[in-house]
Every structure is written in structure tokens, then in C-alpha cells.
Amino acid sequence: MFEQAKAIYAKMGVDVEAALAALKTTPISIHCWQGDDVVGFEPAATAASGGIQTTGDHPGRARNPQELMADFEKALSVIPGAKKINLHACYAIFEEGDTTDRNAISYKHFAPWVAFAKKNGIGIDFNPTCFSHPMVKNGLTLSSPDETVRKFWIDHCIACRRIASQIAKELGTPVVNNVWIPDGLKDVPADRMGPRMRLKDSLDQIFAEQLDGVIDCVESKVFGIGVEAYTVGSNEFYMSYAASHPGVYNLLDNGHYHPTEMISDKSPALLTFFDKIPLHVTRPMRWDSDHVVRLEDEIKEIAVEIVRNNALDKVLIGLDYFDASINRVAAWVVGTRNMQKALLSALLQPHARLKDLQDNENFTRLMVEQEELKTLPFGAIWQEFCRREGVPADGEWLADMEEYEQNVLFKRG
Ligand code: RNT
Ligand code: ZN
Image 1 (cartoon, rainbow, N blue to C red):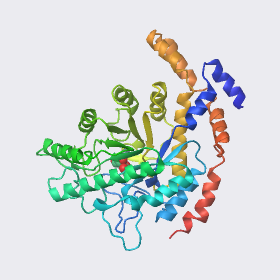
Image 2 (cartoon, rainbow, N blue to C red):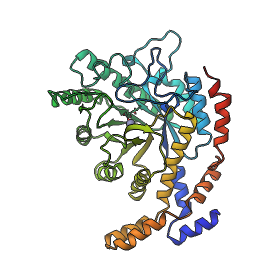
Image 3 (tube, helix red, strand yellow):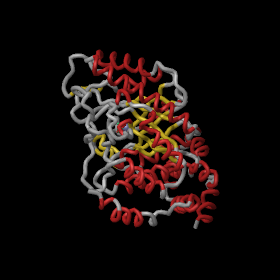
Image 4 (spheres, helix red, strand yellow):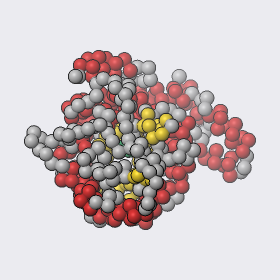
């Protein structure tokens, strides 16, 4: 099967072995928050708030670090290729009696995660958690007119950059540190610029310290639940901020734009100017609903733009979804494998020839070839990739997850 498929691709001018080698070394940053519905481990942890929402009541949510780590390892056991775990600050691990608030957390709260990453041979990415907390006042954090509130969140973000830098040092690999804030207004503003000036000042303070190993990112959004009228950290705001602050990158979350705006078109625009583009790959369903990533056209097109611009080392692929209506471990697995399938399908295209067709303005042949690529034996190459990586092929991993669900997840109270 594989050899036949490989020969078919070779005839198209595609080197299957090169594609498999590239896929193997492209890390996917898997978000820890799918495992527990974005709750975290703080003593006063609550459901996600700040324009984001997890929906569903499937049993088995991880309730503590041990459970989350065990579930994540279960998922890792059937995900091929290179991986990172993406942590939020609210996944700090506290010793008995430690009541440190977010503005004062430090590396020690994440040392167990570094041990976990080392044990599993994976990297780490990081995020300040500027939501689901009593110091979010009237939905505002880094843009708040209340200086006590704003200072609290500046200090939190500074603490997170230091933690990220220390993690990078311990692991010997860079750590993406991504700032997303929920700030905005439910109804028509009286001042749109003031909050943005305050946010700019907050960011300047946060990024002032020179730190090694951290890839600083800012993530924009179009709107959120309860924040329908105005978002402080809009696309134009952060794009301009990143463009004028070398070393700060604009993270693209494909759930954070108007429905006909596509990340697959935005990333090559940014690649023209930036040496890195961090991504949050998700599946927005009517709004920023963060459904599990499926192997859909836009995901494939995002992957195509990464591959055909030789940007596998420039685009930092992270996932961002949270579905509480299905087995959360299976949700990690299927979403991550889908992202990898999208990359593989992009790696199996004769991009140089297709570009020539475009430049020679042979649009008829271009359309026909693009369409015919869709029915090539992609599945056989994917199955071979899984075999070589020592993980189950499609059709062979779910039963194990169902068993884990019965024996472990459903036993949780
Ligand atoms: C929210 C942003 C943000 C969060 C995570 C939990 O709309 O997408 O990235 O989903 O940080
Ligand atoms: Zn996101």
C-alpha cells in the first residue's frame, strides 16, 4: 500500500520520504487546558470566564496535576511526531498551604511541569492567565483605568515571562509566552483609544526586561461573549505593536476574526515581515467556540501556506480548543493528529510546479491539478508515518482511549 502510494506521489514530483522527515520534526504545541475545561489548579479555581466558555458535561475532567499529567501522557502515547505542552499560569502547582496569587507566582510552581516535560521528551510553552480571577474588574486587566488592577496584571505578566525564561533554560528549548487578555466592553464605548494607550503602556512595562529563551507573543481577538461592542486588543492594535517592537510577535488564532477572514491568507502576509508567526489552531463554529480541530479545508490551507513558504521553522503551531462534551483525552488526540495530517497533506504537494502554473498564468491546469491532488492516496502515507513513529494507525487507537475512559476517567467523582 505505502510503496504504491509513494510511487504515485513520486510521479507527481513529490518526495514522500522528505515529507515524512519534515513532519516528524515539526512540533505541535498541545494545550493542557483541553484536559480540565480551562480550570487550572489554583485554590479558588473557577470555570473559564472572560469571553471564553467551555460547554459540555462529559464526565472525567482532570481535577489535579496528577490526573492532568496522567491523561496527557495517555494522549501522548498515540500522537506521533515532536510535541510540546502548552501551559497556562493557572496550572501552577502549589504545595499545601501555599496561597501565592498570580502576581507573585514563580518558577518553583512549574518545576513539576519541567520534570514532566523532561520525562516525556517534550517542550513547554506558556501563557499568563489574565481571566477567571477576582482581579479582573469589569472585564478589564492590562487596560484597566484602575491602576491597582492594571498593576496586578502587569506584575502577573512579568512573573510569567520570568517563569517562561527559566523553563527555557531548564529544557534548553525556547518557550513561547503568549499574552491574551479579555479586555473589552459590552456596549458602545465613550473612549476607544484610552484603553489601548493603557494597554500599550502595560505591554511596554511587561516586555522591558531582556530575557533569554522567551518568544513573546500577543494575541488579538474580534469579540467575546459579554464583550460584543469593543475589544481593546484588536488585530490592528497588536499587529502594530508587534511590528514596532522587535522580538514581540503577533499570534494568529483562527477563531479570532470575522468569519470570512482566513488565517491562511494572513500568515503569508505576516511572513513577509516577521521571522516568526505563532498560531492558535482551533475550529470556530459560528463564534470563537473552540471546537476540536477537524481535518477541514481551512486547516489544510493553513498548513499549505506554512509548507509552501518553507516556514515550518517560522510558524509555531499551537492548538487552542476545549470541548467538554466528549472524551477529553480523545479530543487531544484527534485534534493533534488532524493538525499533523493537514501538515502531511501539505508536504505531499508539488508546490514548485503549482507556483509555476500560477506565475505562467495557466489557471486551468492549476485548478485541475489542485483538485486532482485531493484524491491521491494520502491515507497510506499517514498510516506509514504512524507505524514508523510507533503509534497506532487510524482505526487502532480509540478502543484504548475508551478503555481508559471506563477504567480511569469515569471513576472520578
Ligand atoms: C481566548 C484565546 C486564548 C484562550 C487560551 C485559554 O479567546 O483564544 O488563547 O483560548 O489562552
Ligand atoms: Zn487562542
